Length: 258
Length: 105
Image (cartoon, rainbow over all chains, first blue to last red; front, side):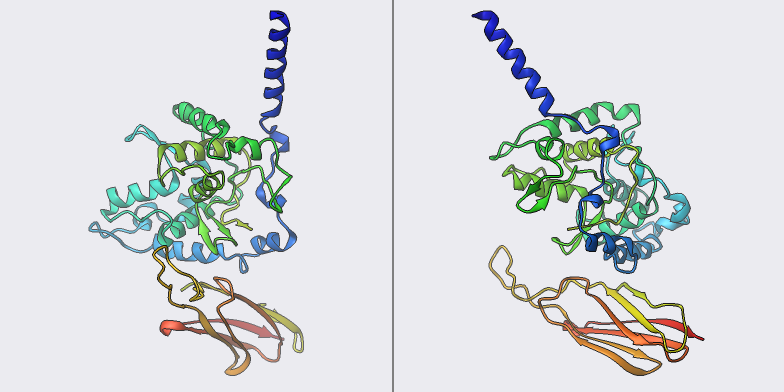
């Protein structure tokens, strides 16, 4: 009897592990490949991609003096086309002063408060999104390497645990859709793999640019969970895990998504 | 406000050319309410005009059902070298302009 029970438990465990499969390297796909031809065309043409309007605004902000230090980003970092190339592909990155990872948005605000002595931008404000998009756009086509820093290891693991953890009234983990059921449909919309290759991205549903944190919070609300606040360590860890999960994929910022 | 214009740099005389414009605007419909129940006032672009060397060649009226950051594309015939001027006019005194040059051979 005990033996039968033990076999049943082993069988259940095996079944469970084969369901929660992580996506193999060669099978990873950008959200771009799940979209219709019209939306792909919109992203491909820089004069039709509304995200490029934010990139233009971000370029103006890059060169604008701010704060009591009266310095612009360009005063220290010069031409972003040179100095910011590849930077977004490494974020979230470990901030030694804080002992934890920070997102690109948080890094911009740290620079603003420390070096420009200016007030930080609010999360999801047009200025923060525009500047982030401008910086990330300099890495378009660059392969993602975020999470390679050994100091980030425990935070990547924290993000992975959160990704696998069921939550909310619907009791769903990120992995239940984005690892196990991508390429199927949810209420008529394709389920993607959740590869964060194009943030900040222009979502037609939002009618504006938005961050990965906004996207994650929408998903949490969707499974009827209490979403973490913007900038919460859990959201940063999830962002870090997602970026490390997309290691080697090329950045598309600003992506267009439905 | 930023605008993106796509006009061919060169064209042969008599060619039909496509002009594509995209401009930044929230296009707030005036039908939405805040969490407190207050109506968010309408804030949209109401009119778009394109002039080719000073002559109006295209005009559009825009309404609340048009998405944020309106994208407009239209066709014209390349007649002479010169300048396309674009103007967007909207609620709350909104006004934005842009221009693009073309060489016609």
